[in-house]
Length: 444
Image 1 (cartoon, rainbow, N blue to C red):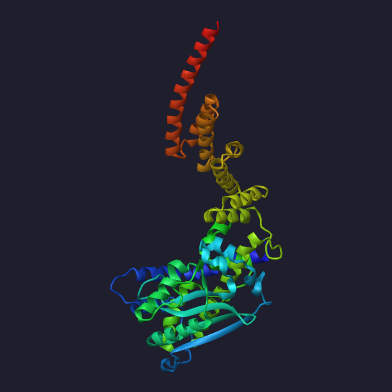
Image 2 (tube, one colour):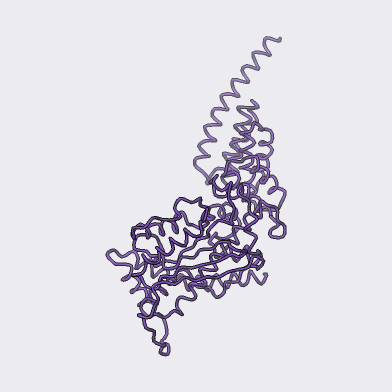
């Protein structure tokens, strides 16, 4: 096993054990009705303290010394490497590809030079009006650098002042688009809620939005264990986030800071947020490289090409999608993925009146050793083709019978379909034999 794989497995186990305990405790507390966010976090802290061994006395911090909010800046040169990518690689992604990945035609006239990458750290693990984004990370290209700036809310009572300052920042930057990871469901609605509750207009609400979670799932959901940003950063970019903290620990750390004023609790969250912004940039760059044929960044394998085909198919470009699927079949993939590729490709060929090509794919699918729903699909398609298009009822019956046997204990729906199909085919074969007999009688 390679060093990166060993490190990845170790990190997964360490983080899973640590974050799992905190997450389970939080879910139990969060399900209790009638508690405020503050009360829930107090309970979480109490449980965390009880689970730890006694430590030497820690230095005292003055909560009153906290700044209301902080604005932090972290510039990165375009030639600087972040894992496998260079920071400036994001500037090479064309607008038409951003349109394919976002399904928003407004990106046709844009690129990432005017985009803002956004990621929040919050007081809760789910959305809601009681959840506050206390750290807003923003990444963007300016002046031959990629900047990661952060708004940190040190005093909950200063939220309105921070949001007003953030509004001025957005106005000055004049961003043209937003890039997030799960931002449609979480980051943007939550941030907009805080602006609304503070009676402020949301300055980036109408911008074109690339939520890369969705193209990432299409590209790599069949390839990796999960498509969490942290996991993809390790798998794809090769970053070392060994010093990172679990997301489930972040609300606890922030509330401890509110009580104590100990900024040491916050610094790992600041690092985590910067890494998330850079990881988001990295996975967008590597996702785009599959389409751009940039061998310096990525040599796509069959799994990547299948993912690219799914993105083009979801965008509605079946010609490009089919080309990616054809290329995927030229590479080694898992049996499950190979079946899925052939199924998707055959559907397009069938719709394009290229049934002969589709039949070849279906015949390849039924030779698969492991029976699955995709295999049953191919049996049904072959039975339908030979019954309705080729009028070869014997061949249609053969595939229907094989499909029926294969469907036992796999799919009641397919089993029922094949039974009804066989009944109909028996009738057609009977009529065909009767018609043949009449014609032979007349010829005598």
